[in-house]
Length: 274
Image 1 (tube, rainbow, N blue to C red):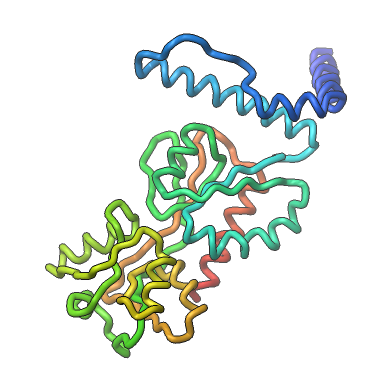
Image 2 (cartoon, rainbow, N blue to C red):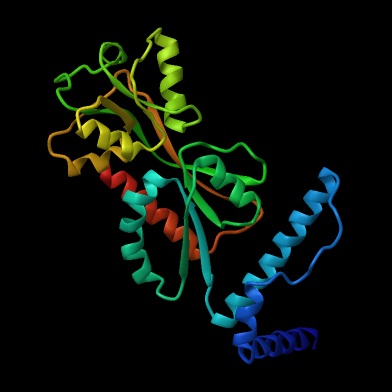
């Protein structure tokens, strides 16, 4: 009898949602509760964040029930270089398999992606930099070496010593790949020189195409260099591995569309470097 009553309540709730689609859409964009007063301490801020995350989860669950989908909306955050090359390749076949699920894409840097997940502003993300935060599930999905992109590269045996004697397009501090490169240079006692420093891997490749230096990027981002036939690509030896990670909130079980999206993105990455 209790199970029957529970089923009836769920059925009435679904009917209630279907009867109010316009109201629901308005509620999705408005906070359900207004919390007043100043938040003076860290505990108060954490409490407010958790309240708003919980309210957001309730609103999204209601939207999913109303739409009849496993996940009405997936909020995806991705680093720019991967978003430009691999999100379009991924979404083509994925959208055919999940025609009723919507995607909201935000391009952010790795640390910003992690922060968005912790704040409940994103559902999943793809990054170069792993997160050790206990609230996040960080999974490596693909690894490829650091490469040099430019004109007139050595035929083989490209190493950091070659870079020390040539104009190099640097990567600004805080860049995930730049941090790996800096550590490798310090370990081998190599000092890189160059007049230009950028944060975007694709900007570095475009500068290399203009003959302004050699660009150092991950092999995944280096796919972009194919649009410039005059550019060459060499793997740095010994190899400096660069890993792509998927991120999601640890306390949230991913839906089937999310799992399939991760699988499709991983397949696109691995195919590009074969």
